[in-house]
Image 1 (cartoon, rainbow, N blue to C red):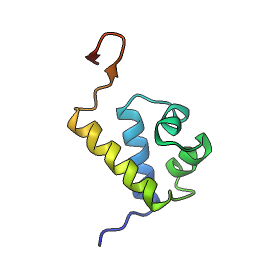
Image 2: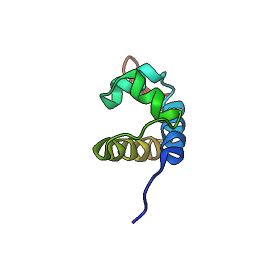
Image 3: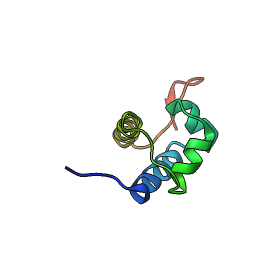
Image 4: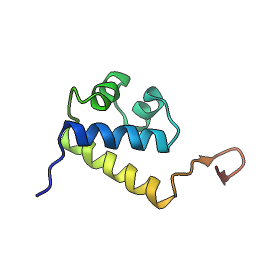
Length: 79
């Protein structure tokens, strides 16, 4: 079984957040956690709960599949 450590989580969160062009606060809202949680994850101070790791991996897959582009609601186009 492949486990993720603090360093791997930090890299995943920061990479994903940057790919989605979100601030830590915006990313926290998207994931359903606090800004402080995202900050701690990115800095390797804490690990998210297993169900949140799954959510992060799902978001990563979605962002990868979509080419990392954001969907713009107003125009209905991807950036």
